[in-house]
Image 1 (cartoon, rainbow, N blue to C red):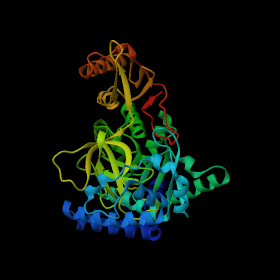
Image 2: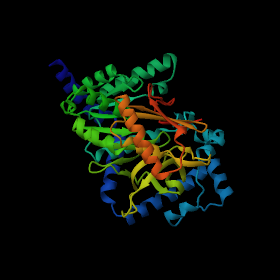
Image 3: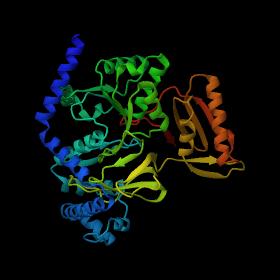
Image 4: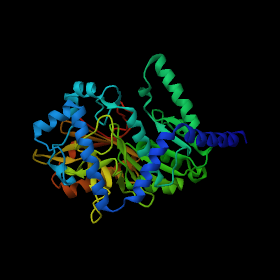
Length: 447
């Protein structure tokens, strides 16, 4: 009874705090929602994006020496007449920002910086201002609103960015302040660093104590929760989880199916980067990702890489920025708003296979990921290439399952590469799942 009263009290508090303390953010969210209701046709979206870019691009050149030099160096126009002209701009890379970070940071001042770990684990800094916080919040809840999720709804966040609070006394202070804010808005955080059965069982019981909770976490963390429910035989539907939002990592169709089957909940996909925050969300009726057209213009270049351009005032706008993420396009749909079937992963995830006779063939890791992810016996995996040898470590129920998975894998690979040398690929049990410094699950390492 006390637990139920506490949950009701927290829900009441969350609704009132959200209304009273997030007025500016909620106002922007309502404005964005109204815009999306009013502007629906590809033609009107395109016109809106063009006008927005022709405001952002001059402002970027005026504030940042980097962009003024970028224009001179590449002979770029002052404005464009069609969004297709962005294809004539050079693709901005993270290395370009890193190489000129001193001048960018100086021109962005006063500002704070977010630290990104990325899938490589190499930390980077990126400028952020107060205006970014408003946009990040509006983007997040604009996408969630497509599934009826509102600010103040109870959230369980499986999270792993404790390092962002800082160190020492200030770190403890920031952590305590965040904890109070979370309680007031109905958000509970669970550590993604502790995902053994005992911890996951505790998380599930806490989630079950607040019916209607929206669970948000890395795909690998959600899989751990689903694995626990499946192994233990618990009735996942008893938790009355409203929705499960996968973020930060590649999501497979089997992940969505397991959420529906084990939790009787709505699976959603959130896509974004530390540099931008949320950029796209799936809708309740499908796993396709729809991008927020009034925040970013999107296009796809060689190797299916997603390139984005900022269309709203932020501290450091990204102009034709290569995300290094590959997307699977959708065929036969309207060009706007931009949608994709799924985000496939990093463009640099290339593996080298050895053929009989010693010939080397480069292939994208998707052939490994896709073959492993559709096998129901594979709970998790890690691919490690060192020189010409590749080890595929798998979490599987038994040694017999591992043998079956190995046999099926080799049959599938042989369809594409009949001459590949099987002796260069080995299978083993995965004992410890590796993570990046940002706490994201690492699926691939090449040395």
